[in-house]
Each structure stands twice: as structure tokens, then as C-alpha cells.
Length: 233
Image (tube, rainbow, N blue to C red):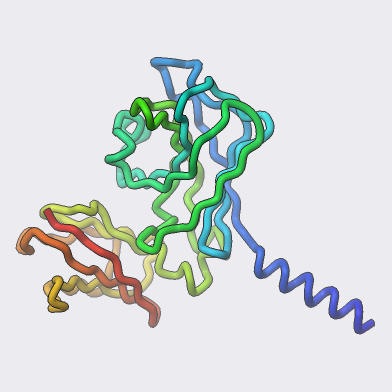
């Protein structure tokens, strides 16, 4: 009986440690200029509990061969799919996963950068980096704390609050997808607070009175905080 209970307990712990959320990426076939570049097959995105995210290409994955075709997750920042596909990768907020083969099963895992809110990402982009050529693009349902228990952990609680663009000019858009109670504070390089915004929500903040330079933006919510670099042009 003790062995059974121990096995059950260990199995439960293993499940908790390795729990993850997976979404299927779809709606590919968006390269109308060169249809042979369009990808097909099973593609999924998995959010892991160790602050990493994985893109899996199924055994039926297929596309045209290319010299430097890479797969990315993209934060569209309000852009439509057509706008994203017509934007160079260097101008998109993205997580790069690596080179892809033209066919067959492949798996790519990347650590989620500290300044990234994974809830803002919902686009999978294939792109030929060497020639700055669009390959294909698809979408998946972005992870939120209501759909993915992983985001309810302490490590991810603030990932549902983010801001863009960065660098910014006169306005900063706040994304608070889970309506978490909190505040945003901006500090200059001397550590002086230059802006505070309480009761953060999905809104636009006027930063036109701040000089160009590097700032630190702190998000405080639910007794936790995270700080990210903000560049104002």
C-alpha cells in the first residue's frame, strides 16, 4: 500500500513539474507571391513550466527548400497578418528558434526572455533571414492565465502585463490581458521616478514630456514586480 501511495505521489509531482500547455498553429498558406514556400503539416506551440517555449513541427511538415529558413514566434503589436508578413523580421518583436529543414519532424525550444510577455505572442512566422524573404505565417491562440495553468505560477503572473512599442516616442501602449491590479513606474538612469500610472489597464500612456534616453519601467502587481528597459527616442 505504501509503495502504491509513493508511486502516486511521485507521479503527481512529476506531472506538476512537467505540466505544460500546447496550442495548435494554423491558418498557414499566406505566401501568395511564391506559393511553394507555404508550409503544411502539424505545427504546435508549447509553453513549459521552466520559462521556455517549444515549437514542434510534425513528421508531415513540408515546405520548399531554402538557404536560411528560420521559425519565429512574433508579437504582432496590433499589426494584421498582412502587415506582419510585409515587415522585415528586424522590425518585429520576436523570439527566434532556429533553422528549419524542408521536411519532417523538428523541435525547437527557447528560453523566454525576462522582458517578454508570452501572452502577447500568437503568430508563428517562417522567414528566410539570409535574403530577408517572407516564407509563410500562421497563428495560434495566445496563452493566458485563464487558458493555461502554467501562467498561474509565480514566475508567469506578471507576463500578462506588457507594453509596446519599445523603443517608444510619444505614447506607450499598456496590455493587461488579465486585468491584474497594479501600477507602472518609470525611472530615469539616475533612479528618479519620472512617471507613475496606477490602476493599469489596456490603455495608452502619454510619455511625450520625457526626454530621449534609456529608462527602467517597473510593473508592480499582486505583491510582485518586474523591471524592463524602456528606450524613448
